[in-house]
Length: 363
Length: 256
Image (cartoon, rainbow over all chains, first blue to last red; front, side, top):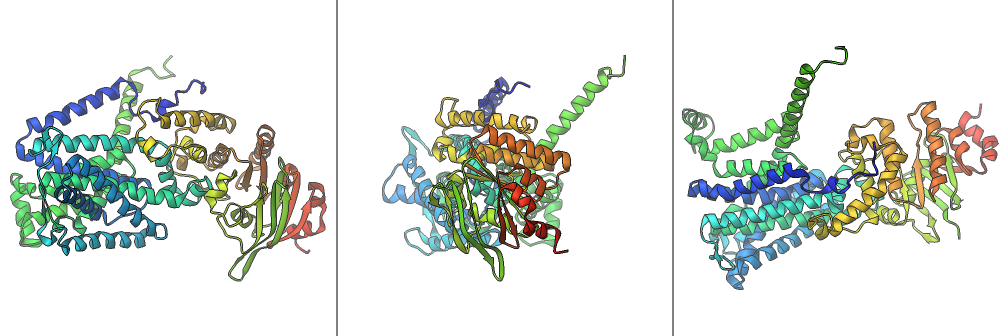
């Protein structure tokens, strides 16, 4: 084995070989053409899922990579959304400027929440972040500046000469931002800072003896995670056109945590996949109702045993069950399943190859 | 100026005195062994030196500066690396990533340059490549090339010990603290550890502070030996002196 000729860039580069360029091109073609082939109201769902993906990337940095926990990310989503809208309405700032600033404001709050995290771990940190999320919604709901319970209407946005009024134009912006952020987060994870995050998750003491400033990287991780979620909040405001405290609930924070666990902690593809699935379920719980036969049966079941509200509640039960079964059957989530499937395929392929070739003892 | 000096180091946990007024000096380029029976305070001394414990009293000087009381990451950055008695690796990370964490303090890429790593010419990518090349020889030296990309949590015990040593070497330390390198090993493996330690000292400009349970190995390797018993220094001197020191013999064999 000649190691001196090893291409070290191959270890960290994003795309190696023609195969992955092809996959990326294919992915881009699919992403670009999706809103053109799907019916209009579906584009709204796609936008929602893309916003969830950005939150998922942020949750993955904090929970998956750094091993911290947060039950308050709906708070960062709210901070991002309200900052964006207030900058636009009060200061007349254009959306493309308001969005990154909202990310920065959210990052600042993330840094502040990261400070107690230096002293808290496990359930105590969970409670602290939970309190943060609840407090943010309460402050918003009781302040005139934020429109109180009535919420705020988001003004029309433009991106240079382009108007961002239709779902399709919003789609291209949101998905574009999501793709860029996903690539950035991926780069971060293979370089020095991402490695330090994971070192803290795996072994804090060893990380410190390596010269990793644990306090700095923990707060940085909170800030990065909050920044991503804040940007997602700004985009959520843009796509819905209206924000109110009722959107940024504790349940939403739980959903954010659930989706990275469901996708597979510490894996970017997993976080993206989990977010897409959970984003879809969150918005389209009542889609179960439209299923032939099964939909009717589920609705009856739900009404008889669970609630009088009908199927939307049942959607939450499905979400909960998905999470429970993931944890029980594949703790690595969807990403773990994917890896297992790849291994199984490889094994069956090599088994085929072995059976078709004469074994070593054949001659 | 003494390269490394411990002066009156005392560590109490509640009513238990784990280290009682321990002093010693280490010259540059030495292998210095600390021996002693179980619970004599050897690992506590390492934890004080690397900043994991704050000593109750006493001072630790490294290259003329007092380092006791500093946070572990600041001590690491001054050039003190260590291994742990009960292997403390980054279990889900690959061998190469564990070694790259050893390079952490020698690298600069921050959040923004990391995020913006586009193409092999970007600063973060160049730094990554450079440092990966630097640790490659350590993989070869410690026979870890085959497990380069395996998550270290999956590796057998002996290999994990080597990865931990490799990770400490990747830090290019001036002072290397090695805690029980031969723990859980048989005679052959132990002999190999001895050979490796001598090799390291010969090839690298490094001072080694060694904790070793196995007295023959510890004394055989060392230029100077400190013997501890119940946290108290009972003897300090050249290996031959220690081997014959009545207090040391008593500590290991009992009063009989």
